[in-house]
Length: 136
Image (cartoon, rainbow, N blue to C red; front, side):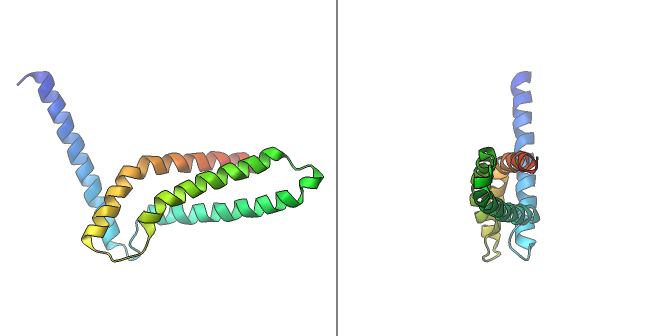
């Protein structure tokens, strides 16, 4: 076998093993969880819901203070935060919904969790950035 092909095959095998281990660990986490969801998904959902409530309060207060010259940029930041938070909740909803804790449902949630992990991280980073801008 050609050394370059062998190196490519070895890399593919390592990637497959890494994915399998992540999937197994995540499935076990979903299956053994009393809430039927992993702690990271529950924490992200709770934080996002809290942020949505905060943005709603801020939007309400800003709307009342519009006549006093409240910056329109603040309203735009609120809208951006709300949009990103709603996108994140749509992704997290299947991971946190209650149901039977069967092995198959845990496996489905684990696959969805592993495949959407990077997208969730990206949305959380955007939310942090927007939150910092609102606090300034």
